[in-house]
Image (cartoon, rainbow, N blue to C red):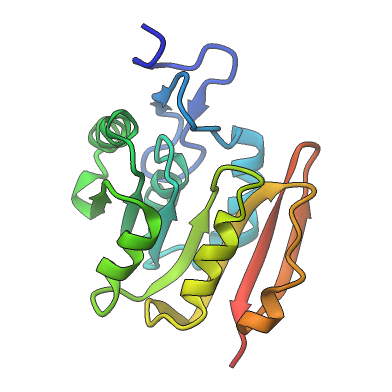
Length: 196
């Protein structure tokens, strides 16, 4: 059936490095998930790999969980996965079990803003990654919330995966500064820090 969990044929998702290196991940067909390709994922983690060990990682709009799983495989001490979709959450759970990383994981099956409110006062994240549906301004809603949130550690980095035409000129008004930008053929990663 169209919405069943399956192994992607044309772009097989794998863990790139760490304890679960080369393990194949399942992903979702026909839903609002858009898996980050292995090449882009490798580039992303090459940029932050020296700071991942012992970090606390938040994976918003988690899809199949590939980004948070990569962080755990590379030594993050804990990852929280947020996705408001039962089939996607089942896929994340299966991938975590398969990679033997479930014990370091928390799964929240709810919308992102509700999840952020629930995490308030319980976690401080070193990395927050989000890959929301494109062109719906969801990343702006999340950044507006994070601008006054206590869940960011002192040196936290927020990474947004977005379409090439997504505008981020507003981030300074929210107290963030762009520290890096990586442009790919079809999308980009914006790295943000909260200004002191």
